[in-house]
Length: 212
Image (cartoon, rainbow, N blue to C red; front, side, top):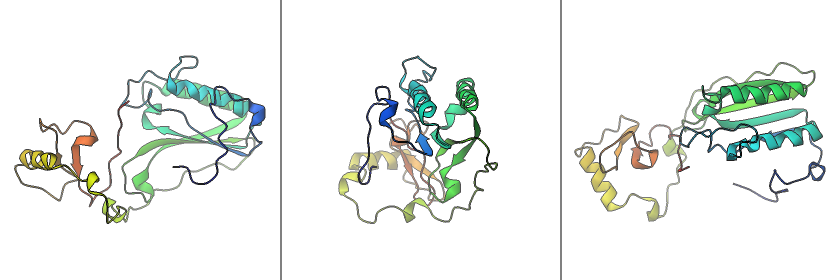
């Protein structure tokens, strides 16, 4: 979500770096569709033309502005077996520019957010600095039901036919001690997308996936 006035400079593949104000901190990311396990995993190699290869457009900004700190975030699969070599190539380029990189896979549920959402975070610091340490995990004290709105439009509720399918799939026995209550999939397939699964709001939310 965007709140307030934003200096949107446009398409990163087309903007001129002299139009970008000088800055000390650059936060950046790139489309995850070609990396995510929910997508086709076409990768992000330089000049590959994939959406995720827009990462390499960030290079010209870093070269021109030389910010002291960089913060990157993307899906966990960025450092998975298939893409780790390409991720390492990006890290090596940053090192050639004088940056020291610190990266780690963090889960939102370990930092006070009731959602199971694993993401790679990388902090890159230019020049001399104190060693960076990622924050320690915290005990989760709230659940999904604690952050959901109390009053919502009826359009967000399951339709009657979906409720009937859930009851059929669970044989009418809802176990509220489980994170996954059941599925509304017609074949009772719990391996399907999270869009078909009914979760218990007494636990944390799953990481929602989208069609790629």
